[in-house]
Length: 531
Image 1 (cartoon, one colour):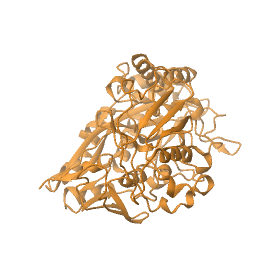
Image 2 (cartoon, rainbow, N blue to C red):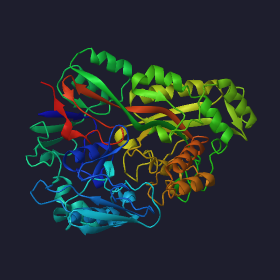
Image 3 (spheres, helix red, strand yellow):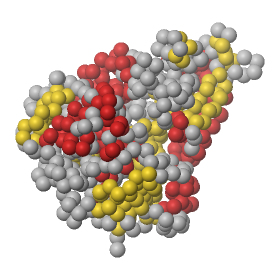
Image 4 (tube, one colour):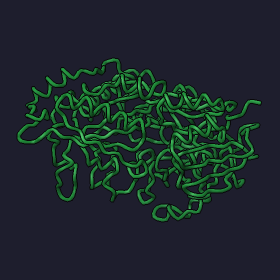
């Protein structure tokens, strides 16, 4: 048996409804995409016979289409064959607004047509250099048409398979108790020979990151623990138990601080942090730069994250060809004070700055976990020396990261002046990642706070640069445009803090290949235990 511990428990097993990583990972046990991203950010086939290229005729010279060929002989867990009809169906299912799939963005702007039983063509309405989105990685898992066809659009949430998956993956479904446990058994007809290596799999949910780390590293109760957002000092202490090791994989996960461009304390038409308002402090680039200079990223790296995170000034931290060399960070309270003076925020008799009768008092929120609370404390202490009063707010993770549109404490509502959290760039290409800074993606009441742009930052030059990159087929010119977009984003209200590793606890004899660009379980068929 392979025993996995996820301290955030999955609540459903449909990858197109996955609310966060926990549901994606549970889905990846049973469902598969055409291709996955490896540790170096390269595409490798899963259900595809090969990766499309110009050489094999898969990629059109004009960038407007790609042909995918399906590996022959793949069967669903109920014995039915995987065919092109399943891909066409998955595309139609995900792009239908009535389905309310979280993956709609990867499917709505393309058309998928069947060529024959084992191949499809994806058509784009313009040259598309990033063609490997649909059917790839975390958003690419394919559903069986014969089981979901009766549950599309408005009926999509009624499908029995949302809780009892039938996929093509290495394990067949046995049991699911939402918020508790997922169980599967070895798929005897899996399309890779002699895989998987375990007879059964169990994904247990609940607890917290520290107890999960302890259950693998110290007690050996579990083989694998996910997302160990724990200070490195604690992890090193637990590793002395000798039952396991900490495994660190870098991809595109970023811990960052957002400075609200809108005013969270003013309500317009029933909406706080409205685009119709401007933040009294952070609408001034000088104040944003001052706040960046008050963040001691090096200390946060050294004393909190250790080997599990690197201080960074970039939003995009990989693959290497997309990483900017133009940015830098510094901890300089004296310079921050000078910038605040220039911006007209003068210190009062109590040492707190004010301008136009308004005190520079800021609410700084994040989710509850030890590294984040310690980071908050470091930033608050430095800000106080510059005459900024910061009130700290910590919200339970299940609330902060909830999709509940009625809850004002979710991170997309951003009813605070500053907020901190982490996101993962789950493709080895920044195209989707950098969408979170375009103006049309601003999170608002109108779009039920589903927009990716949480800071509500808007910059016409950024929008134009991003759009130019979306149709630039020359890879060198495109990389330069994406680097420019990164540089524009981090120059104002977006403050990168730590390029975080994907940190897991792995039992001493478990061989668990992973990629920082995909699900933890993207290479699950290759997981094994040394004798």
